[in-house]
Length: 556
Image (cartoon, rainbow, N blue to C red; front, side, top):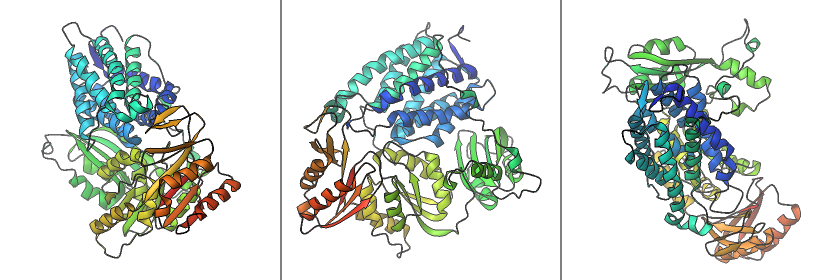
């Protein structure tokens, strides 16, 4: 396998990617802890691993020793499993790499280098305003350096050795490129995650490949076939997925428009995800008649992969295991179609109930330290079943996954309202009004309404730090607003008192406080007493039940 390190085939590609994922998994905690704010909400490592692992699952299902096919499967799996900004960025990185390797059974080191640089370009294009000092910078500098050092004696091992060498230096420089990193005394976490992936790739090329426990079985799920008997009724249909290589003998490949698929499949199925990359069309649809889907598709090309799964069997398996109904992947939409719907990201029973009372149709479980994937959003859009869906990510690290899902989803017009926190979502939903019937006007009103809120958060410090000039000791309770650190105190009540003052509670009219899981009844009483000192402030205390943050303060 390692005798000829100048050429990368499908089998070796699979080996190095699995090794990269395994190395990242070993270092997830380290990456998570590279958080600008010294509070227990770091999740970059988790996001990057779950994103990459989703791609590994798809890649392992490709049996052919075909580099292009495996790279494409990896990219598509990562695309739907992308979590957090770092996850979305590396999913786009590998999407570009897949494009660069498309149609190649194997590739030499120059072709591999070109594919990785195409991946960097694709990742940059995925971010509206690319920020230097992040994983984007680390990938660009490292893979450009490695390509520039290629010569007639270069091989895969020397290429990735050069990439790792530059990656270390690039990571050091991120601290000086971003003020927040320098002040916190950390390197960029996304860049560090990419470093560990590349380190695992190089380990495999030097004969020390790492493996994921049971990785070869990740994509295969054992089902109890007795749960769909001779007398069962097909209720949910078939989850049908395939990759179709368009054929010049059947269609004009360059000008082919996937709307042909969308229009036809919308008549016989739902939960559509359809997109075209070069000459390959990726289709996901739920239908009671998968043979019609395949028959139609074959008019334009030939299949590279096909997967058809009985969703009624999956549903019965889920019930048998007593899993929650909303965790069933891609169940058939049962709600009547409506004009407008709202989807929010939130965690904590109290916060979820509050948003539902304000009119949210679907709540995606997640937020800080638990970022939902692109596929999680697509499932939520399916369940809402509306012409227009308004989405509140409620976290800056969830924007890209929400936007990526919006681009992929074809059954609704999806409007991503870029809410940074729970408070902005609350302010917007509290004034939610569909009466105009104009989706664009509603979107604009939601954006304006959420701008009236300012949100403060209190959590505890997991390490010493100085952030925004505030000195913090491990174990302190810190308070901040819009990523600006405002206070650090030895107890959470003192932190609450100081934060309300520094957020100018005396000038506000309304305050809602969401208490976290760890807050006691006595602490709730003390918070109420502090709030009552502001005579012009209308105050509400809600048991939010959230993790990470002891208190979330929403001022209007």
